[in-house]
Length: 121
Image (cartoon, rainbow, N blue to C red; front, top):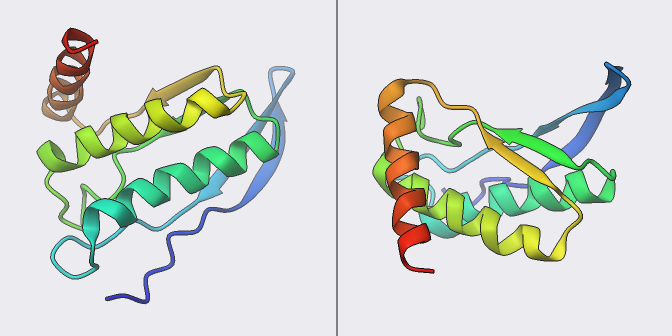
């Protein structure tokens, strides 16, 4: 419901191959339960990006938040994720954002969405 906590929690930091490795934890909305789903999903990505920037992390990888067991349709989640990331990184020092997706079908959905955005620029 409305009590969902979409904050990004502190990075568990370590070092790997000479660089900083961090893991941020966030909780995305459960589709059909947590309202408004689109705003909550966007805020989950935004909060992670802001937290990464605060820790001076220059690259970050995301799963497709909420599209697994939380049931958010990937066709609706992909444009929210991509547009939020593109909007937010303009004001941050993050140089690389990767989407780590579960399946080839998920990849195709994200790729199609990126192509739509690219064609509208």
